Image (cartoon, rainbow, N blue to C red; front, top):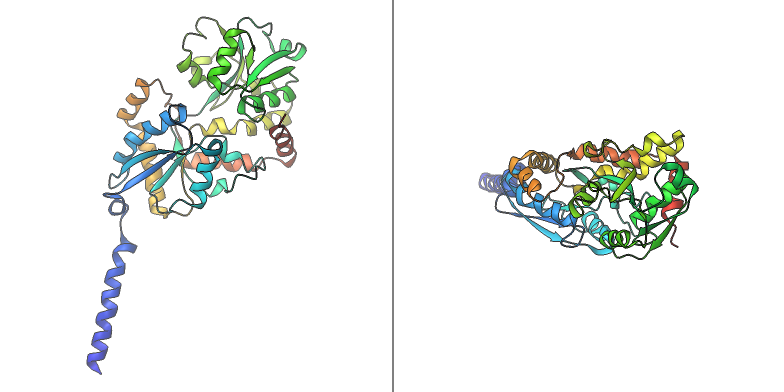
Length: 345
C-alpha cells in the first residue's frame, strides 16, 4: 500500500513539473527562437507596406527574446480580409500581429456586413504617426475660399463612390454645404493627382499630407496646389501652420462632433494590433516593444531616409480609447455618417 501511494505521488510530482514551465514561462522564453508574423493589410509598394516593413525591421529587437519579425501582405477586400483573419483565425498567442488600414476598425460602426470583428477586442499596440488630410485644390481652380466652394460647383476626383475621397467629399458637402461633384473610377490617388495636373478634376477631398509631400514634394512649395483646410491627426500640422483647421470653421456642435467621428481613422494613423485574447503579459510586452521601436534612433533614421512621418506616435491604450470614443458617438451622428458612407452611386 505504501509503495502504491509513493508511486502515485511520484506521478503527480512528474505531471506538476511537466506542466509548470508552460504556466511559468516568461515572455522572453516564449519568443526566443520564434518568428512573429506581421500581416500588412495592403498590397506591396504603398504607404502601409512601407510603414509595416520599416517597423518589422526594428520591432524584434525590442520584444523580449528577440524573435524575427516577418512581414506578410494580405490586401484582400480593402484590408477587411486581414482584420477578419486576425480576429477569427490567427493564433492568439502573440505570434501574429497586424497593421490595419486605418479605416478598417470603423467598418462595423458603418454596419458593413463584411466586417466580422469587434474592434474593441483587438489588442491595440500603437502607431508611429497620425495622419493629417486636407481639402486640396489645383492652382487653376476657381475655388479659393470656403464661400467659393459653397456657392460654385466644382469637380473632385475619387477612386469609387465608396472610397475615402468620395466619403469625405460627401461629409464636407453636407457639413459645409459644398457644391462638389465627383468623378469616380480612378484606380488610386496617383491617378487622381495626374487628373489634377491634366485639368480633368480640380479638387481632392482627403489626400494625406504625408503622402503629398512624399509623392509630390514640390507642389505645395511651388503653389501648384492650395488647401482650404486640414483635418484629422492631433491638430494642426506644424508644416501647415497657415492652413486652418476644419473644426474651427464649423458653426454647430453637431457638425463638429460628426467630423471628429468621421476623422477618427486619421487619428489611428498606421495602427498595429494583435488578435484578441493573447496572454496579458505578452500583450503588455508587445505594446512596450512597439513604443520602444517608435523611439529607437535607428528606426527614426530609417523613417527619415524614406521620408516617412514617424514623429507623432500613439500608444495602444490611446488607439483603443479613440476606437471606443468613435463607437460611443451619439445615435443621430452615427446615422448621419452611415447615410453618407453607404451611398453607392
